[in-house]
Length: 109
Length: 112
Image (tube, rainbow over all chains, first blue to last red; front, side, top):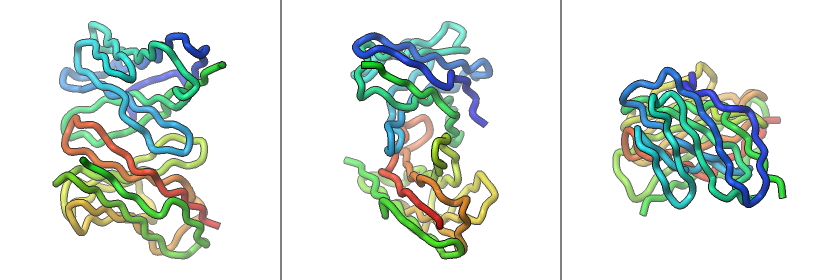
């Protein structure tokens, strides 16, 4: 079973920041937090991942709570192309990858 | 660079017919390989994963099977398709634990 909890859907206005939350209260010390997103009719694509420190890349930022029981994916300036399902996943070494239901992000023009 | 090939893109099969979907990865060795299925409007369901040739782990009891005859080849099969086998089938690979997962373009299977 997926070890994370995300809201089913969220809405945001175009060109505004988006904060996508993820709860993972049972996270272990060696679990990495990964985010993927799936555009319509495509396979998921990697977005970002982190362990303890906040992470930034060209796509997004990942803010990880100090106790690591939650994290937030931040899209700094949403565009219509960011409309997708966003998945938060915990990974620990040999674990296979189980996807939850994710958050469906709607971007309003 | 690494690439993943998955075919066919779309497939329409009658109930009771066999199935064979193939996935190959280029530019890497000894990848972990995955098969996922996504029913319409649903999330991703892990079907099989493999950490090496001939090593297959099944996640969900069903009439599907998987094989890994070569290091970079992963095949999903069925002897007799059911209506419930319809969905979007995705192959994925990763170089090792905690690595990024890369997905193929998927096969949309309709069983009629």
